[in-house]
Amino acid sequence: MVSIKKFNLQGEETGSVEVSDALSSAVTHAQLVKDYLVAVRYNARQWSANTKTRSEVAHTTKKPFPQKGQGRARQGCLVSPQYRGGGRVFGPRPRGEVRIRMNQKERRASIYSLIGDMIRDGKVVVVDSLEMSEPKTKAFATLLKGCGFDRRVLVLGQGSFVIVGEEGLERNVSVETMKYDHLKKSIRNLPNVEFSLVADVDGYRVARAHHLVISEGALAELEQWMKS
Image 1 (cartoon, helix red, strand yellow):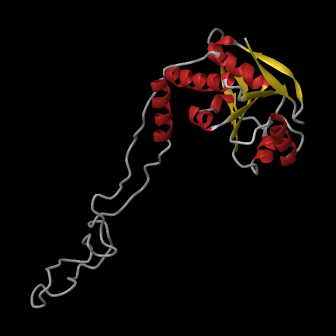
Image 2 (image 1 turned 90 degrees about the horizontal axis):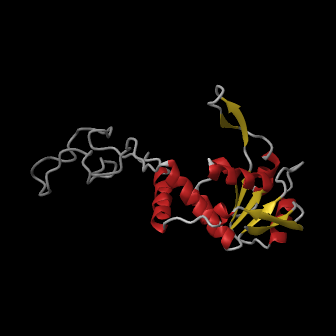
């Protein structure tokens, strides 16, 4: 097992936490990780850019100038693409459902591999709890300073779940949690610091981060997620 440092919210090192071999040694093919990151970025596009063709532009149909007699090229109307305010030729148009799909096993394997790389590189620390009694940016900045983190940081918290379903078919369903409201307010003025629940984390945010701060409960949830 690999041990990673444990801190409190005051930035003081309080011990260490052992990480399971399944997570610390998680690795997958580099091409799978690359395909996953490309899919995440591609699926984030809105495809909402829209331009009008000449048939959609509201404009007069009067000829710009007489057909003959001026020695100029004939022109039909001001909605032609060569005129300012005219229609666009081959401009961007809204697209339908355009997504790159990946199955759950591929997605999880990519996330585990990215987190495993950070653990092996010593870029992960554990915090006993991320719940704060009041919003205080200085308090969280002190934690980052105590950990020696001065670049992009991703903070992972434990979600809240309820058990639903009939006997033998129960499953955990993620529900909205308010326990990290003070934490979110504390880090929103800190540059390059992001927060995510373990259940909502995506590999792109992990890949962008140089350091990872994870609560003890979130680490247990992540390891349990691997076994499911």
